[in-house]
Image (cartoon, rainbow, N blue to C red; front, top):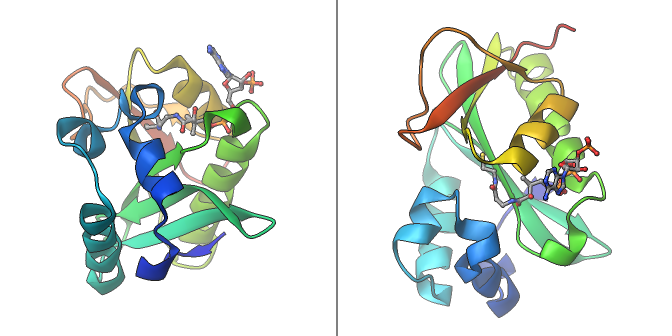
Length: 158
Ligand SMILES: CC(C)(COP(=O)(O)OP(=O)(O)OC[C@H]1O[C@@H](n2cnc3c(N)ncnc32)[C@H](O)[C@@H]1OP(=O)(O)O)[C@@H](O)C(=O)NCCC(=O)NCCS
């Protein structure tokens, strides 16, 4: 995992974002068709944003997905993940990378909490976040990403 650069944007990444299986629960990519230009612009925006870190997930040099910390404040951040290549799902990649980014946020950035807004129908994602140490928060706070979202939280404590 490393910060993603505009030059990392490939057609495979763009095609992954446009794949219904991948983008069903991703508000941005689902709302309009992605192109090399729109995705490069997104990566550049994140590079310049002081309150966001966009990590690319790489295996043997191949870009397979992203984990993004965003809305980073002094205490909290929000996190999102997508593995673009569905052939790489169910191998533990998503949960491992979410766990790594969440640990980084708490241990290195000194945050108290990492929040995830997960659509309640996104069973894969809920499992991946649970596996990464997130717990469902029962605070009635719903996701900014989905009206049908659940709020999951990581504090670094079991
Ligand atoms: C969510 C996502 C990142 C998970 O990535 P992944 O690499 O498959 O995750 P993992 O392999 O670490 O774990 C997935 C878990 O879901 C389970 N799972 C996989 N497919 C499933 C399915 N169809 N139904 C239910 N559970 C499923 C796996 O068995 C695993 O659970 P386990 O801990 O019991 O073994 C990936 O599916 C994805 O990119 N989805 C599209 C984008 C998205 O929805 N992002 C999340 C937005 S909040």
